[in-house]
Amino acid sequence: MDRAQKEAVVEELGQIFKDSGVVVVSHYTGLTVAEMQDFRARMRAAGGSVRVAKNRLAKIALEGAPCASIGDLLSGMTVLSYSEDPVAAAKVTEDFAKDNAKLVILGGAMGENALDRAGVTAVSKMPSRDELIASIVGCIAAPAANLASAIGAPASNIAGILATIEEKAA
Picture 1 (tube, rainbow, N blue to C red):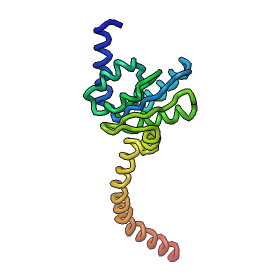
Picture 2 (cartoon, rainbow, N blue to C red):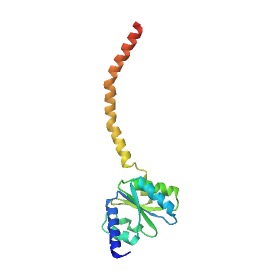
Picture 3 (tube, rainbow, N blue to C red):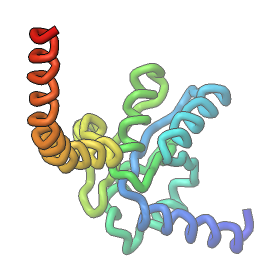
Picture 4 (cartoon, rainbow, N blue to C red):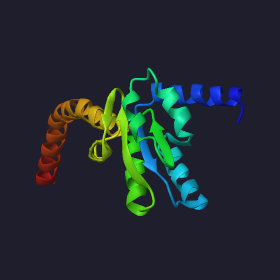
């Protein structure tokens, strides 16, 4: 890899560290190509990505980044999983690590906050952005649905009373 390629990788990693809601650092020693492809596919389906990079280049990219504290985790065979959604990458990585013991989660970063192993687990248990939006929409829509049923209730009650009177008259 020549100097220009290294600079491009550092630039790309810098963007990843700057733009991602969460970055999870893991060791992937012993993972087969098929297992790594499965991990990448799961991450892609959740809206995230997986990146394997040289630790030295990643440390250079971390200089001045909000999550610079995760530089200590970059040793050995490391893989970065990241997503804009602050929960997606942590959830997918945690789920994959449960299924495959060869992926060992070291820690990560959420914005400026460094996460240890327990922190990544805690983040993975939080509801995702889509789940939160759905619950907020449900809370907003509930009063309108209740109002609509309350407005429609008297008319249906009158119709029921009229039907009962008709039956008695017939």
